[in-house]
Structures are given as C-alpha cells and as structure tokens.
Length: 234
Image 1 (tube, helix red, strand yellow):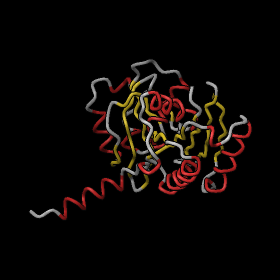
Image 2 (spheres, helix red, strand yellow; image 1 turned 45 degrees about the vertical axis):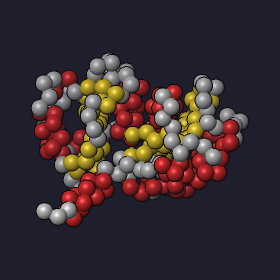
Image 3 (cartoon, one colour; image 1 turned 90 degrees about the horizontal axis):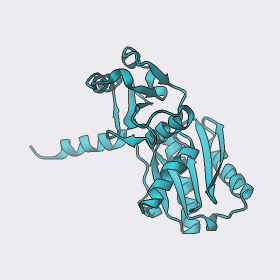
Image 4 (cartoon, helix red, strand yellow; image 1 turned 135 degrees about the vertical axis):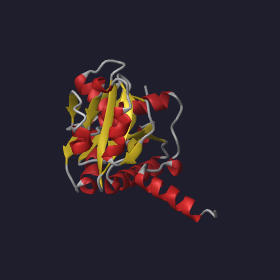
C-alpha cells in the first residue's frame, strides 16, 4: 500500500489527509482566506502524527479544481514546493468528483445513483459534473455554465426524479425550480476523499511529474478557446 499525502484548498475548507499502512488520517478546518497560513502547519502536524517524513511518501495528491482561483493556486503552489523538494510524483484529482465521493461516504448512495454536483462559480455560473454512485464514476465532462444550462441538461434526462443534487451551486432559482427530491448543498471537497480517488489513479499508473501538474479552472480554458476562435481567420 503506498503512502500518499492529499491536500485540498479549492473551497472555504482547508483539508489534508495521509494514507500510511492502509490507514487514513485527516485534518480539516473551515478557514476562508486563511489557506496560505493553515496548509503547511497542518501538513507538518499530520506527517509528525504518523511518524513519516516527506521523503518517505510515494506521492502527493491534490484537488486540481475547479474551485476558488486563489485557493487552487495556493494548494498547487504548496504541492509544487513539497514535490520538488522530495522528488515526488503527484496525483491531480477533480474537486467535483471528490465532492461526489464525499457525499457517497456520508450518505451511502447506491452504485447506480445519479449524482449531479454543482459548485458556485460566481458571476451567475456554476461548475458542474454528473457522476454515479459508489466510485463517483464520471458520466459527463465538467463544465462551467449558467444555471439555466445545467437545468436544461437535467430536464433532458429521462430519470430526473432519481437525481441527487450536491454542492452549494444548487441555490440558484433555475435549479431550485427543478424540485429534485434530495439536495445536499453543504457538501464540500475533502482531502480524505481525494485520497480514495488518488489511490485508484496510483494503482492505474496515472501519477504525473510535478512539471506537468496544472490547476483546472474551466472558466479560463473556455475563455482561452473563445479567444483562439476569434483570432482564427475567416
């Protein structure tokens, strides 16, 4: 079993988790705008509590986004420093998929339960993705769009009444009007669940070098693609 450190700073919650000898230890604090002060001390505390050094880790996992631009930059900056220092590979994990895993851990949904994660992206938009059940298997790409576009996607589903809405993006009126039977708006990504997904990535041989690690903003990539289309000659 590998030893993996996981961190997430993509939301107001700052969390770290450590997998060692098959056991998971976690620390989490709700600390808006304090991630840069909290993250390194939390990592140090967690490593010391399990009597392991940075160099004894096999990899570092991190929430790659989407989420808070500032939070993602802080998290990846710390991961870059640690991974460079100890020459470790990294495991990027989707924060939307992590939220689906967090909800699965807390509420024990069935294997085929459709989970729709919506994270408030501000500017009257949401980040969203469609996942399923026990392993939060992705059933769609991840998007940033107006809530009305997500409502259109859901309205086109044959089994809309079976969907579970997850995350703080569900407060928008267009999504509230859908009347999903179950909503968990208090779900936020946690490093403990990043570990679960990172272990799958590790076992599949999908660790990457820190040089290849990037955050996933979604909004920036969409804007970049639009600029590229504008530049192309007609």
